[in-house]
Amino acid sequence: MLKNKSSVHIISTDGTSDKSLMIPTVLLNHWKQICISTLSFIFILCGSIVYFATSKKEQDITNKYEATLDKVRAMNRQLSSDQSESARDIHQVKQSFNKIDSTLERINAKMKKRGLKTIALQNAGGPIELDEDNIELLSEFYADALKELDRKLAGIPIGIPHPGKITSKFGYRRNPFTNSGREMHSGIDLKGRTGDPVKVTANGKVVFAGYEGAYGNVVKVNHPNGFQTRYAHLSKTKVKKGQNIEVGTVVGSLGNTGRSTGSHLHYEILKNNKKLNPEKYFNF
Figure 1 (cartoon, one colour):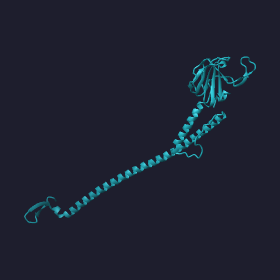
Figure 2 (cartoon, one colour):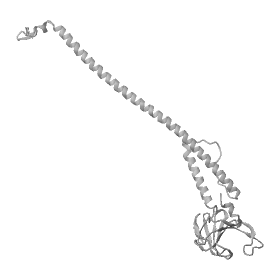
Figure 3 (cartoon, helix red, strand yellow):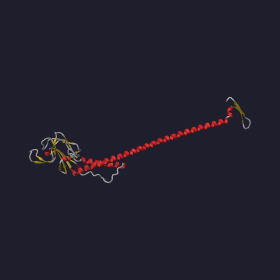
Figure 4 (cartoon, one colour):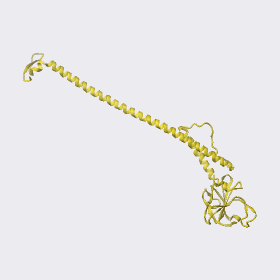
């Protein structure tokens, strides 16, 4: 079909140029159909390209939208979880503070029984509005209150200076030397071995450390709120007058000096120069 060709003459508008081309006859006979087919093909091709490009762009947008939506959903879930955890945390903190309140009330009740000043909680009272904004302030308030409580308790002679067995209690007793008559025992005796460590039961300042008559070697320590403790019959003193000491400091070694029938510690507690029963201060 393409071997059959026809001659096409091309003449310029001024009639001076004369060119001829050999074109397959079939193209000349069907040039309209070929042009229409070619244009249709080009149109379909462009349309397909535009369609696929648009579809891809829409798919990309859809994917990005869905990804963003997933992130938002995840953030919402996390926020809900955080809010739930925050609510639980606030509830737990509130319970903790309530326990602290109860503990302070019990401690204050015991301090009242001993004639001591209670721990005053400033700005106490009123409705409780506990949320994330004031938890930090409330925590600081309780931290300060507990520090003050710790400071006051450190100055009260609570506990035992030596873990030995009680051999003589506070109060009237039979004279241990004559085994007859009655005498006032102004402290408590704790049995032990010579050289055992004797520890102070509260923070304070040593006002005497040395030998004193019936006490033998004795250490006297002044504490806040008018308290004084005495540790007598020591074989050795290990602190000096004027020394500031903390609870648990070894003040001397248990012994048998002074008016004593054997190795033991004579322990006294005084408040405003009045002698008290140390046993009441063994536990708090």
